[in-house]
Amino acid sequence: MNVKELVIILVFAFIGWALCGAAMGIGMAFTSEGNALIIHAAAAPIIFAVLSFVYFTKFNYTTPLQTAAIFVAFVIAVDFFVVALLMLNSLEMFTSPLGTWIPFALILNT
Image (cartoon, rainbow, N blue to C red):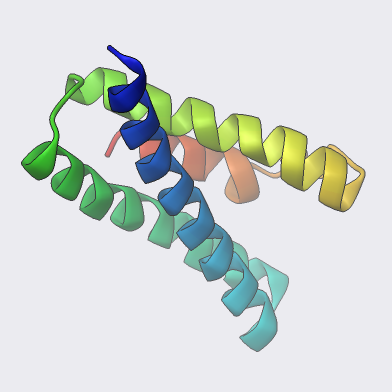
């Protein structure tokens, strides 16, 4: 994989992460935290399935397993470094299966 191909797949991963964040933010604005987490967990695989479809239709630089692994690794890294450490100053979000681990697993299985 060359730099251009890596950048393209990381842009798709970033878009997916941002849309998941938007789903969580909108959910928190209009409903309880529990419901927002459910919305986020349901939205994550849908968002990444659509992004995967577009990615494989237009680019297809990686296998499905490689793509899923890159998507999940990117989301975990950004959630850890940006959300947990910089924004929340806490790793508590990683104690919630519904808030982190279930969406990660669903993205990987997309």
